[in-house]
Length: 193
Length: 223
Length: 215
Image (cartoon, rainbow over all chains, first blue to last red; front, top):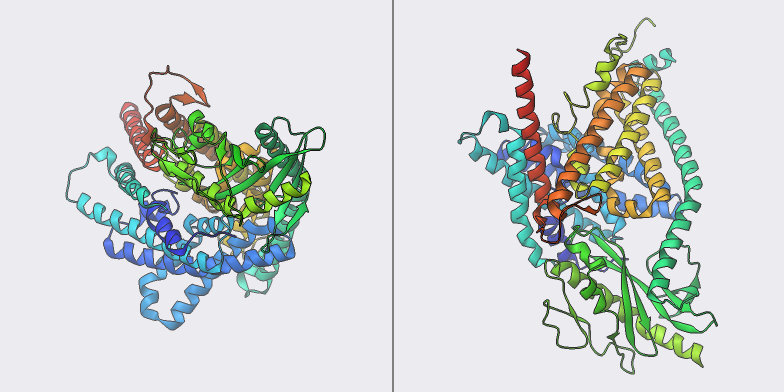
């Protein structure tokens, strides 16, 4: 059982060990999607939403696996649970709020193969978080992911206005930007408790 | 075979469901088989690593017994090969005399969880040494908690006395590199302050849980 | 076989075999050119040995999954194919995970949860969907081998460069004297981004050079 206080878990996941900038989880949408601020925000929200639900689901599944003494099926069940969660969330949103579905819809299928969700499930199990700690961890990770995505989108919008050598356009310059962004996030290490 | 696939693609979810469940069962069986094959090897490896670490902290140690403590503070004996982190090990010399304890403790470091082992001598009320078992701290920076001579040396004879109620008299404290002035202070490693502080915290938290129980156990054995 | 699933055009042309194998190594290198599978790429490449282990584990999972999917491609229904693929990949990843633990606990500790994260490595699902699910066993395995080796080689380069700059050693063996001041940032996450950015740039530059020569 892990005894880390909730606020420390949240700050740690959101800033100090930002999922994107320190663990490199969810890099694909970070480099691929984050061209526009609005898209980035919506993507971030969609991921946070799925994270919280998947985190709770993974917590319950882990309990079940331990109870049945088949922990070696952890990975295979997590991935099925995450895929299932994404499907359910998609169906639910489509029924409940068509407007929200139009905003988030295209991102949802992409999230199944987003490493950030599986990473979250695996990390929370490794660290032995309780249910409440898991939910806070998921919220923090989602907030951190959204923050990184939004920051990157803002930088990209500025980048449109400057001349970048033809060769470096796209991936190379994005990676270097991410490097600098990650460097600035290291400053948060001081508040780690 | 081709027909089955075609049918599933065309008509509804029944066959689809059946194929996927079948695949799931086959995959699970495969995993279970590999798990059964590799598990003895993995346990063996774990035990070897653990024994090596424990006997490097207690060079005269020849035998050990793993102990677990429950919420009420009661000790019980457990199998050493059980893969868990929340145990202490009583270490005995060649004459079956209790030398001291080696306690496993873990907590968050800078990057991820750190698990470590520290030696506790209940008679002298001292920490006798420390070994990092598991860490993913940055190579060359944070991971120096595992091999930085000055840092590990400050745990070599570290007084950690308990009062009569079994509480720590002084919590261990992390001092800036080279400013150590009290016996219970530990020199942090420059460039790895967060990892060093994490180690001190981990030992403090574990000590608060374990030391009084272990001191009692040690008094019982010596009687 | 009146109505064959649309998704299975069988591509078998003998002379293409070498090309199927070679393209992953350089022309379509999964990391430097396609920029896929970034999470493990950056996370575990702070030393050459970690990078090598990760590369080999991914290679194993890629080849086995692509082979199996290619064999089962007519059995797995088109609708649920992604779910089926993910199941297969997760199985091989779990196997690789236990194999690494059984061989060396040290390496397993260094890689941590990132071995499990191979499941969501876009390269694997990408190759399965784009190639293995549409081809016979032999080309599917060759393609996976090429891509896997390209991935592993790229990881090794990245890990090597970062270890060399960040701690002045390769595979733990020190190359420079005591006076070498390690460039520690290279080992930190930001160094991962920076080195990869420079390498991607370098590969793009080399490729344009080649393209101009061949004109």
